Image 1 (cartoon, rainbow, N blue to C red):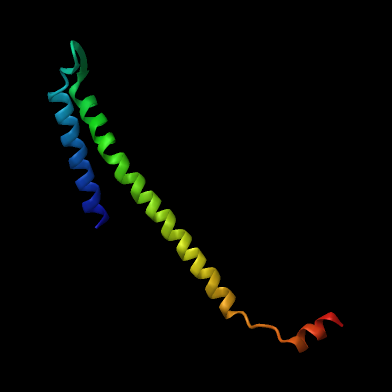
Image 2: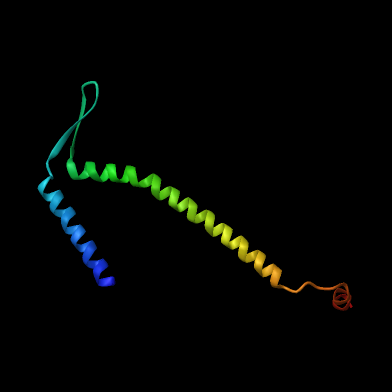
Length: 96
């Protein structure tokens, strides 16, 4: 299974590299009024991908953080519930 994953990522990297090599020319973007920006197409696509991916990644990390906190709280509660409670007689013996 690891081999197939490696082959998939290698093919994907080759396709991206080929795309960048073929479409490496500058692209003119009309921003507003008469303001224009010249940027290479692969860089533009990378910027757009990061802008789209970043909010989703941040939401995922926040959910993982929340779930870890809940799991840790449940584990603490479970451990305290498993510990036997001391009786008053045992407390007196420890004090003596």
